[in-house]
Image (cartoon, rainbow, N blue to C red):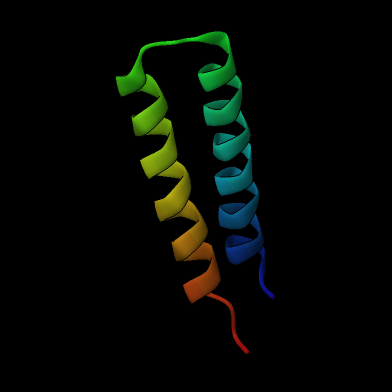
Length: 52
């Protein structure tokens, strides 16, 4: 696992936590969806960069 894939996975998990937190606070749905999409893309990029 290299540093870039680790960073992308970490950022994806951070954004996912933010989306869940915003959902619980009752923030607008667009903000939650945007964070969710960013999280999914970041996690996907980090997983695809893994050298298995």
